[in-house]
Length: 482
Image (cartoon, rainbow, N blue to C red):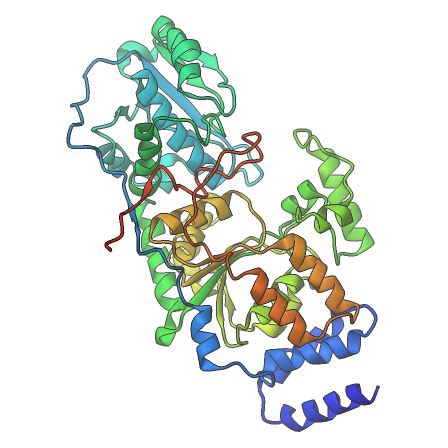
């Protein structure tokens, strides 16, 4: 253990000159496994800056992917015909799920209204999801901007006209991942017959691929132009962005999806206690619409199906070369597990959230409105210098897709299968920190949000989401000059 003694001696000499050492003492408590003490000390040195990083390396961390030959292409064509005043009927929708699932559903339903030449009634939102948020469409979005932006695409009304308000709407649950033909042959006749149709679900009711270009572009006009957050959300969101950019510093928006509901749903409990694992299992069994009950969390983690833990996330950022002074905005709810956030906070003390950046008075209008708070996080994440997500949920899909549309702003998509394998090898003392860091960087060289073409998969559930990558459809490659 002579090497370990030497590390401690070196660390002791420098500790008196580094304020950071006080902030990372807790890291001694969370690293386990054979050779854990050496691993602990190595990470402490990395976090403190003893393991140095060159200026070139640090500037490269914030550099954006090359995308000069790609541009947005969602404008209506010059040959676009004026919208016909005639309507086949009125379409009511209930956008179900959390904020971003509802967002995708609204985009799809505008496209469906276009397909069927229906008049869309301003969407109603789900109030029965996990958060039980009572926020309405007008609370979340600038509804007048929504109608005005789409006035050349479809007819939208705030409410049913008096002549139709007394009609009992025909209830219909559209089939998931459907294409234009389904809505024209199966749903349109029902609309024409009943005049008012109520689509009870909006999640994933339109295919990712195999749709006309005009429909794909319309979905993007809805997503990136029409669905503008309400003034309170936009204004406070922009204020938080300004506070994150204090002294001109860049910042990371980190979507750490380590909340209780996600861990219960996925069956992931790595680094949690037996009692916490049991609590997650009970929650999973109590939620009737979660079909999968018996889950092997260890196997799921190895297959990349688990959110990274806060500790794994800390090691990822360290391995990529980020300094402990890096400013991080946390795009997430409360992390589950006693002390689970401590490793991340110890190594990266400059962690902020809407709760810590905004005053109590500023947050008062958002209290008990989780979807509005998620909207705040969306604004800050979209404008960040780097977006990192640890689980490919709807927020991750929405933000990464929007960042691609806005010029392929840097987004790190962790290679979880290979990364957690590396972490385990590091914990077991099988690989040095230098080798570990080198491998982490190599793993993520091409996972930074650069342009590539979305391709159809074996099934809709297994293929890349249109909203995570709107290329092709809404982003076009321009010819390069020779």
